[in-house]
Image (tube, rainbow, N blue to C red; front, side, top):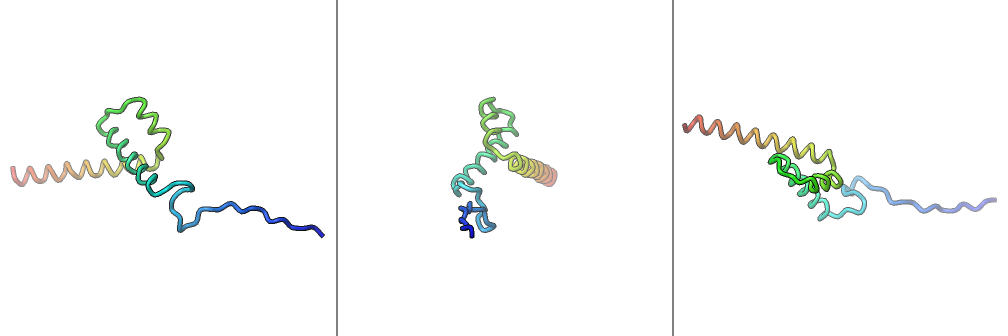
Length: 90
């Protein structure tokens, strides 16, 4: 008879653990802030090549697209509210 050896089991991410392996809540918040900051800089159009390359290397593209869409909706909504206010009070 052969002896069965127990193989080490790698811990897997569970549904109750929303953070990626090795990432703390502080790092996740910093990443969200960095994503918003990068999107705001892109709206203004002032970003150094070094800053751009740093963003490309560290930020999740899906998060950048989502933050960009939210930023566009907030910007357009603000313009609509401003125009409505000016027309009513002008």
